[in-house]
Length: 161
Image (cartoon, rainbow, N blue to C red; front, side, top):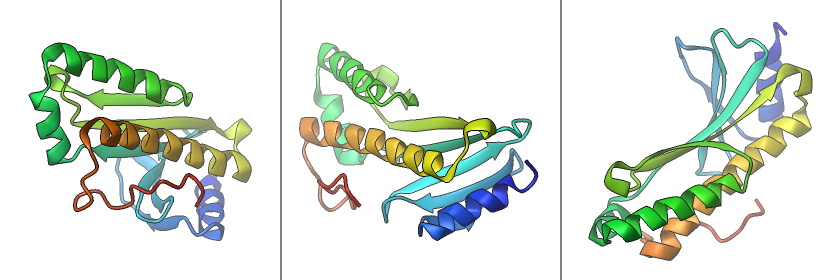
C-alpha cells in the first residue's frame, strides 16, 4: 500500500505516540514513538519489505547492573541469561540479546505486522506487547541486581499508561 506510512503516522499521532520521522536509508519509513512517555520505540518498514512493518525497542543495561553481573559466577550468569530468555519468550516476541561472557549488555524486542493484518488496533496492541516484554526484562534485571533510581528513569511499576 503506497500510503501505508501516512496511515500509520496518522494512527500514531492520533494516539499521541508519534514523535518524529527518522531519515533511514535502509527503510521505506522509520518513525520514533514514545510508549509510554520516556520509552522510545521504532516503527519501521524495511526496504524490500513493502508488506511488513516492524515495531522494535532496544534497551541498554546500566553500568551499575553490568558491574553487578560481572561479580556473579559464570554458572549464575548463565542461569540468569537462560531465565531472561524464557521471560521474554513468554510474550511471543522476537528478541536479540548481546551478552558476551553471559553479561547482558543490551536486548532488542521486535514484532512484525504484515499489511494484510494491519489495523490500528493491531498496531497499538503490538506496541503494548513490545513494551510489556521490555519492561519484563527491565524488572527482571532490577529484581536480580537492584534498582538504581539515578540511572533508570521510567522504571514504573504500572503496566497501565
